[in-house]
Length: 195
Image (tube, rainbow, N blue to C red; front, side, top):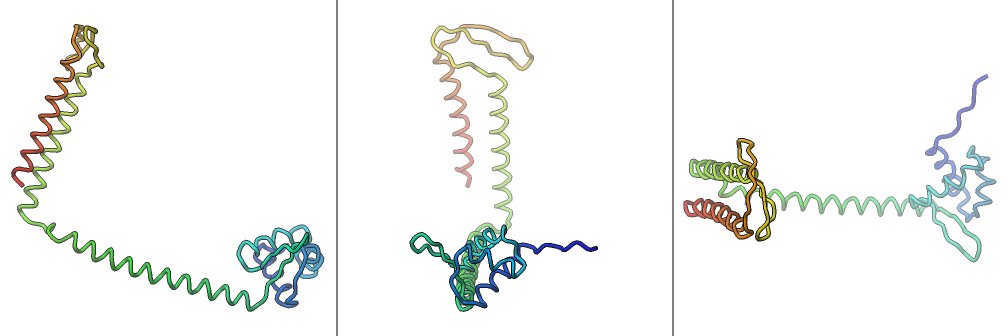
């Protein structure tokens, strides 16, 4: 004996749509649950199948009083397909227009950025400045200092791992930070002077 295979969700949806298209009538859910088994859709799955058709706008649903009616006409499906087609067409046209705009923008941005000796030299200088900036940042991290208030004791360790504890006022930390900021700003300023 071979086992009878059940219908897939897509097959159930097609069968339920056939019920709507053949009769071109309005149905209550109870009526659909009676008609579904005639087309091979079990009663327990009719509600889920009909709801999936409603979610995809293939079946319309409306509540009148206390009853909920479902319907779908072949002309409605054709109209829905035409609407989807027109929406996709307009999306395609706007995407093509956006593509042309982006290509034009890309080409305009490439102007002035052509490969040349002057550009390569400027890029090399920029790389050197970035390298120096990163080195200064690493150097600053080697000597961490705690946030100070006047008269507190702080510790600082040198590159050789020796830890020293000494009193240090808050102002000297600000002075070190300002000097580092000045050094970074002057480096960037000198780069801009040559370009």
